[in-house]
Image 1 (spheres, rainbow, N blue to C red):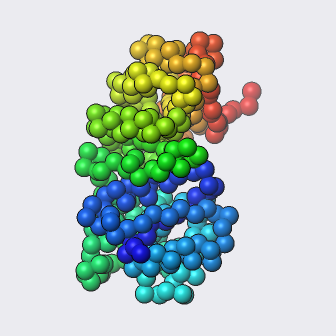
Image 2 (cartoon, rainbow, N blue to C red):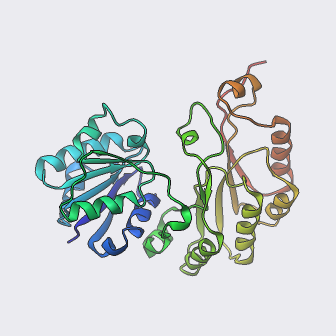
Image 3 (spheres, rainbow, N blue to C red):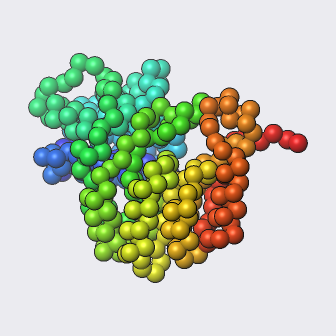
Length: 318
């Protein structure tokens, strides 16, 4: 039994929901009264609802993303028909920026817009003591990362061995691209480095070898980037694989020196190369030094074993 069930529908089984684990870690005194269950979009709504209700919850929190919004709508519709007294709370990017008029949001009891790490706990305390908020929409202010309990202990051994484990060292984006919701997530906020690296050390000791960082711009603050890379170099073990999201025009010498030291195939950089067209860049409000980006790509290709993944939004035909 659990008074609070945290759940989402992942795109597929190998993915883990980092956001749910933050919510669970920051429930504090309510954590023993909560359970986390992850499904995926390939499961039938009835099966998902049966899994949720088997915990006999009073509150169900669901993470809503672009890949699961339709499936979540079917789950919430069925859940409210079967157990209308259960409070359904929605959060996540798909309900944070456009709530009015969404059928899914209309089905829920509450919607938390923004980063719900602390607001979800406050809402649960209120609901479990009969103090229902008057408004349906709760707008969460971006929390100070230093005030959050880190969630990495909540990854199971099964997750570490079989699934993609997500981690982060910062939140927010420094850019203001017109086409991207991340441009609304400002400012960039960094997690305190010492406790974060201690958590990473614990994951390594438990056997994790694949770390996928979800920082939107890992190489924004080079001092932090180097400190994290140094940590993994100092804790190097065969099979270690690290994924980072990078900007292409910011690879100073000190960062290059660290990158060269990693064995071929152990680093993957997802590079945010939105456009090489200066006109497009100006229209979408994305600044970039194309000459520096070209030189850095040449460095990565010719002098390192980094696997680079990138995409282009706009290119001018010549």
